[in-house]
Image: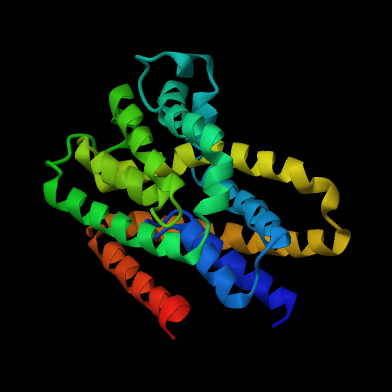
Length: 266
């Protein structure tokens, strides 16, 4: 299979899965293993195209991001989503990821660990749907600082590949009185600083190793990831208006089963 086709496939996978509760990292590891697209070059490519997914969120929520950089946005008691909500939502996972970055990359990025993450994450989502109380916060603009902190704390679970950042945060939001849509939107928004920091950090380490030919492939993947992520977010928010996370949980069980058979039984 040509590099151009692999580039497009990986870009589509990243864009479609990054903000759905099915684990983009898990899918990238599984698809990369299936296509033989692994190693340092693949890791760099996957980091780079995440920037395309980030751009889709920045465009969709540009008004909220612009509002947050205004002086009033640093006021804890201000109306609407503020920079303080974002800060308390990302500090827990950034702190833990900083200290555990190397062991996570070394020991958890494999098909086997992804399969475990897919299954446990699916169970967690189903439990959240079953046990969560009726939501009292229906808009991301009405969430409290306390809710932002707890949802951000649940995001730590996503450091295990396959668990899913959006899945863990949306489920966490359900436990703390948020609607699915409000929790999903907060998940998208706090992903921007987290992913941006992670991408820049990883790219700085290997930027000098990139050739012009590789850079062209990366641009193609970036554009594909941006377009598919944009479509994925719009569709997902509409889906959540009338549906639960259950279908994504069952999908995860299916992917885990197929992956286990392919990598360990056949």
